[in-house]
Image (cartoon, rainbow, N blue to C red):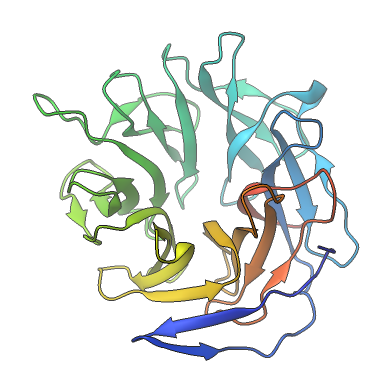
Length: 304
């Protein structure tokens, strides 16, 4: 695939398939995508400006491993996960120019999947420090006051992950198998009022809110469709399916609400690539170039 290549995309609603489009030129500059790539084998954080012909650049010093990035609302900081010498994942933050690296968690168990709050003061993340399963924690942006939002005292292990803040900062969407199958849930930022939004035999994961708070886009996997992106009202309801060739995952809504970034992969052994589309499924484009760069877990950053 070449940089800027178009994807064939359909929006499925009520069992009918309708091609949406037309295909248009690449989106205007103004944003970059921070994502996890593997140019030399190990995962690194890369930055790609959304301009025709742009090439990715490395963000971290000395080939440091970087995974699951999230960008602060002002675009100045990036939080991410990285492994230590024992293979345990910790959360770090770094300035957009690669300076000011600081470790935020050191629990002795895996901490990853950070998500920055809309006001920039807190970071939600997944942690295995209880040694049961993944749970959703929240901490201050400097690493203080790490609090478990999903404790399951006296219960069998329930796995939670992929936290995503609502635009008003009041709720956090996440993935959980508390209902038996993996589904999309939300919870208040203080750990109260958990609500299950999807309840199907499918595997529903990786939620991302629209900036107006009205929609949640997520990944649905099952044997019939493979892995596709879905969009539903933020309070729950019947989702719409974005149907396209190959596997789609890890959606991320842009801060201005005009595009959804995601990962597309046409086969088990094909390189995953970063793409984006409009919220109605039109104007789907691949952004990452050919070859060794690949890419997963995109996050948006405003370009100064």
